[in-house]
Image (cartoon, rainbow, N blue to C red):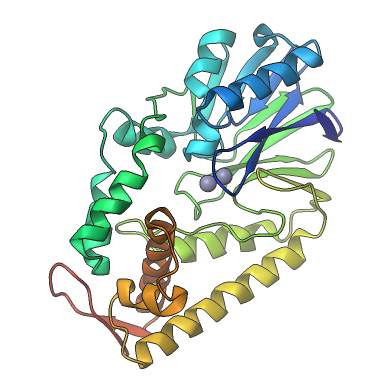
Length: 318
Ligand SMILES: [Zn+2]
Ligand SMILES: [Zn+2]
């Protein structure tokens, strides 16, 4: 457990895949602790969290509140178990709780993921492999009912100050960051990461990339001294990171337009062109949903036209 800001401790936990660790944060309250995020739903992750708490003489009862930044499996995995052990109150965005309820106990992808793969022109055999590659992860999802459903703008007293909940949609529709005005730190979840850009996934009826870039822009004026991300180390300079990330997505849009210019007319064909078929089914899923998010972003900007043909959408330069 490392102290990363006044009254904030980071616990680094193991993950079974190659983005290989996730951080959870403990924030001191006047009475007990707020735990931000809940790691992945494995015995290894639970063992590491428990050992770290015990090593600092913190019992499960000392955790009074649990905040989930977003419902991805490396952030929500142990939540149900931790709530049971601690009796803590759960805080998460109402939309994330809803997405989680749709994913839990179904044994299936959320229906819109299947629709997205069909719209992308993903061959049926690959759709099947993508589906199978998520079986283990889907089994870790459990329905959660927040005691405090968040919408953004809420404030909470903590030892030596307050925390503000900042709604930052994009990486996930109900993603939350936690900002300390007194100490200038931002617990950023997966919204701002140290040295990778977070995955932006297509969602129906949304322009997730525009949401994401807007949520980044909104944070520029915040006087943030330290970013505390879920993956990687604390760092300074969020303004510079945000500018570089804007540039990254602008370049990706240009690369996609180039691929379309060379005849790739579905999201699947663009993924094959950009990654040259070197992706596992698991990674293909993230790539194709990210390409769909960029295609929708450019369509709404008038840079691309989309066919209404079913099921695969064909894309042409506008
Ligand atoms: Zn995430
Ligand atoms: Zn994550």
